[in-house]
Length: 315
Image (cartoon, rainbow, N blue to C red; front, side, top):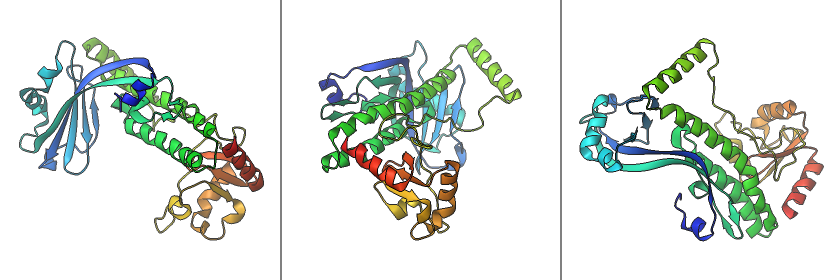
């Protein structure tokens, strides 16, 4: 977690990225969904920046920025929460389940590995929640680490493989945090003049067609345990779906995959042949080796890929 005693005992410091904002988180149980918003909302109101989040079945969340001059105790009082929820007209539609004050921070541990200690998730990095990538980043850490730990503890790889963990994850994580900070600084404006300037920039960008038309793209793996000079290396491999709803993961299972064009006509790849063929064609490749975390190790001939993969594990 963010207060990881393991990190502290290991003497690992944080690089502070200079974003720190206190917010009140209010979780409620829902009795009447008809009175609740149907979308996730980030409301850039300088009088009280607010986030409204759809949660799991039966629950909803609001997050309210604690303004300069306010205390956490003052804003988190039940009477204060009732007042904050008044504009949403949800009285008798929800029941308070939990309230907590969090300080949204942007920090990255200087080292994610120290000997036998490996940090992941909030222990290794803290992301402001505005891009919704905090838990996602932790899951990506786990996916990167899991197959490497399995290979090392199973005697299939040298423990130097674990040194590639931070090398591979840090650039993607840094870009994710930068995006969250940018969104946070956009949302957390409490100056009316600053909010006016921000809103005018948005209106101008919309009029000029300069607003993003899709989610941001984060950096692929550029160095680490990949074949960096081969097309597609370091990118996510697609997750094709068969007509019956099965995923490629369901058919091929865990572990690495070595997929060649020559294999596509037969079982079990035939239901996914068109999508995999399109990917191979786009990258001018005869075969692809996909790592257990579903990043592309590299493309090329099956023999070269198998040999390179064995070398990577042994290095």
